[in-house]
Length: 129
Image 1 (cartoon, rainbow, N blue to C red):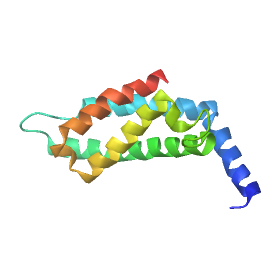
Image 2: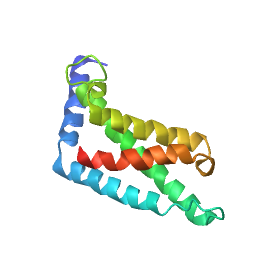
Image 3: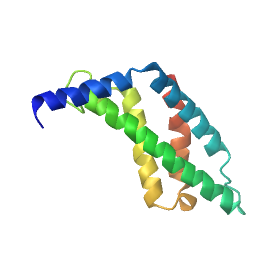
């Protein structure tokens, strides 16, 4: 990619990342996602239709969090810059949420309560950021 095109992509990503409405959208997404996770049925006789719907909703939120992560990596760099993505505790928390979301998609959500527990714990922490 030519240097000027790289700059345009990075500048656009930066403008979106600092856009106030984008930040509010992410906060609302985290709150709604936490509420959805609270309605997941872990009982011995779960409501499978409700759980399937919540799992599908979680796919959407995982996609949103992935876009946020990619955006921040484009803006800040991944490792080598002083303010790189993985040098920040909050971003590592986001990375855990995203990776656990994809693992949960691969491994059946109904069978993997441990991953869901990780996501339930780490997602609200995103609000502190």
